[in-house]
Image (cartoon, rainbow, N blue to C red):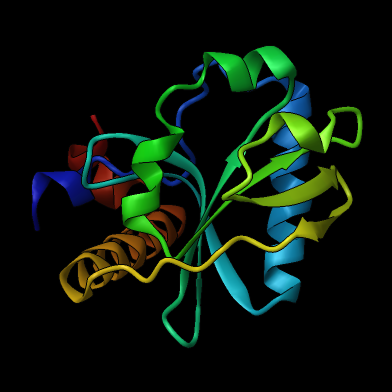
Length: 163
């Protein structure tokens, strides 16, 4: 098992960067994605070293990345979202109804969410990943999911991986 897989925690440690609004948007967005046939992983480390807010995978192998934005300032401060496009088939921003859609880039999808649900306001354009990138992301997703379940089932059995 490589070191990347060993560093994926069951629940990412609280880093206090996520506001209550961002956590609520993530929850509602994950509910929407599940209703569309996707399984989601939050805070998934990407091959680039960045960490995506939500990564979703469906049975066709499509991978979507959703970046959560809780304020205009949050979007303006984020200069890294462009890098996520290489690791997904579609890139979305999720945010509350309080933010105007016009501030988000035209070439991304838009999801409006709260803690209880979300709706797809604007579909993201498709940009298929290369096969090697798809395999890498699918394996990364699967390893993160399996390790999080293993940690849940046997927290002490994996202590050496997480400390």
